[in-house]
Image 1 (cartoon, each protein chain N blue to C red):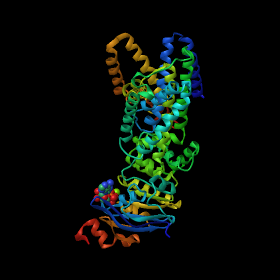
Image 2: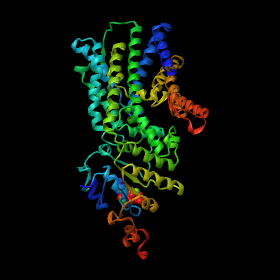
Image 3: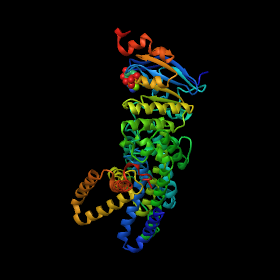
Length: 319
Length: 239
Ligand SMILES: Nc1ncnc2c1ncn2[C@@H]1O[C@H](COP(=O)(O)OP(=O)(O)OP(=O)(O)O)[C@@H](O)[C@H]1O
Ligand SMILES: [Mg+2]
């Protein structure tokens, strides 16, 4: 009951927020936070819960974005159709990658994803006739107000959160975490580990592609070095999740909010030194809060509850 | 055909022959002991049965079906569960969640899986620890969790790999009681154990191996008094 109330409050705040912050600059920041919250939540399903760390989610983000862009560039089809096609393209690419890598033990998946992101970046730079190469693709957006984009981004984040939340509360979640904790134990409990890793991968790729397609429509300009970027997309997603809390439902969203807000503050106050200062800050947080912000808070809450209920016998710690 | 049978199974690791032409079988609900000195191939036999390692040669049958090329998770789904000598708790999951993960094999419903898991935790004397993270458990409780988790998949055959190792005498007695209770519920068991007390208190038949080869198998008293078995355990001049 308390949980439902909290959720409703959060939803109302989220809906009213852009009516309070009316300046386009502020609304832009809110939209950016939601984009990263959606991306982080999708990455977390695979990397945080199922333990399959991807260093190349930019591949799916970029594919989603380029699907929307290329529809407009070559076929004169509204880039909004990218919201439908982009995630499908991303998911389609994820299937063979998962089928090949998830059978293998060791860092194959992490490395394959790292390579995949870079391969797509290079292909999209060099395949000039189809992609416009490094020049990128520009579209003229039909909607120029920020407000509709805000609500779309909110819907996107909501979708990412709902899919993750439903999955992790079900058998899927138990299986994902079991695989992360010990793949041998999981197999011996009857869990088809290859298949379930794929079940975490597909929705993750889907939402990342969807977010990429939305990004194209919102920003109206993409080039391969931006949307397939290792540092500014693939690694940044991971930082956002680590900051907020790996394998926590709300962690990526909290991480995204703090990351984006702080980087804006640093950028406007410090200019050139901001990147360094910000990097150091992120490192400190990750060092001193290894479970991320939400993860540490969760730990504190559990500890308090256990104290209140008197030692180890306390029941029903999990909500 | 026997309920469960391994037929002339062989496993080579490179040049090392860890298991050589071992055969034995057991009937539904039967408990047998598998004994042998350190490094004689007992754990390897378990790893072959649930196909962690592929066989070099030989065949394995369960309920009339050849199972030696099935993936590990399918073998579990058919009804063969195991514990690990080197315990493998799902560390950052609670004890209850560990057991639920296994219970989901036969139900998609979270509440049913939880109910089944609670039953099993009660059965294995772990119910008071249900909300602890598995990494916080003592070694005795980790061994209990291994058994609880294996039971959660509703096996017809249970492979226990040294579940009494590292337990004190009282805990060992408890472990024997739990094994007897499991057996009474109709589950067949293969027990690997160095503590002869556990084997003798539970097994109807013993298979003794050394250097991956069978020494003898049969009625427990006869097997443990077999000169080759005594020699394998105690050295030449005792035989
Ligand atoms: N994965 C592996 N790769 C190479 N050699 C292995 C492997 N697993 C086991 N062995 C070898 O196979 C032999 C049998 O080992 P195993 O673990 O089956 O013995 P065990 O009877 O279970 O011993 P213990 O009583 O000490 O548990 C040993 O010589 C061991 O070193
Ligand atoms: Mg062993």
